[in-house]
Length: 179
Image (cartoon, rainbow, N blue to C red; front, side, top):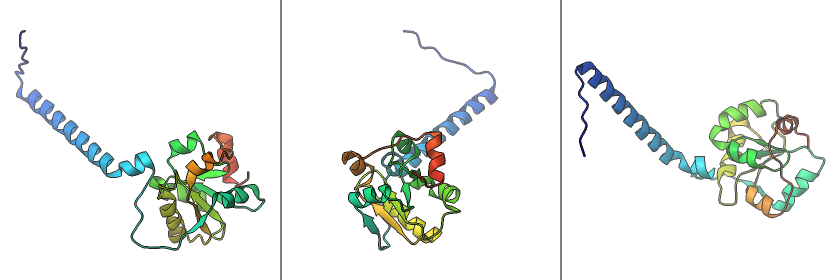
């Protein structure tokens, strides 16, 4: 087997290629570090519960079923990622992914009355995203009636409740909070 070597006659080319290699390695390293730090949020939709204790009100599966079937106007918020939301969500829910909460909250909640009843959910009982999102909505936006459906999407599906796939018409209906 013959070893092949590449010889560069122009030293500038070597320097350019070396710089490109260093930039590529640094970029991959930064991406890896970012992914490791935020992997829980990206893959699992979970965040750590903050040390500060707030009074969180929880709603049961029965309570959520009653709320979604009643004529009362509630705002149901899915705190999971956009991709998880598009794969299926509770009918009537709007998506405010926790990791993009600032952007989505400004877009979707600017005209919502602060006393509107809100129920937030995420993936499962082990997912703390809904708790953190509920705290965020109370603190930053001043919503006064925020509850958490602790069982999340997992419990909703397990109870054989209706589900919805995201389509353009579904999003338009959600913006008016109609079901």
